[in-house]
Length: 118
Image (cartoon, rainbow, N blue to C red; front, top):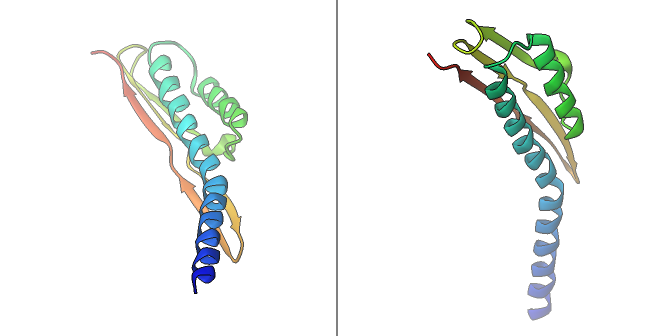
């Protein structure tokens, strides 16, 4: 009975380490991507970049972080004038994880909105 508990305990520990190793990278990439989007929105509220230039910068950052988002999925909307307007950025995407016997789709929806000084 004691050896069965030990085998089950080892199995649970190995399964936990495996799940962390598989699931942690997409969540870490999403966190970094959200931070990049937030930073881009804060900086671009006060400069004259066009929506397409902002979209290209975010897409490049997504490629650097291996985030599976297409250029068309990135929605950038600027309203108002530079410095006093606002900018809104959305980039939803899905990451497919193939776990043994259980395929999993992780849906991420990084978005931010930044308002300029009035």
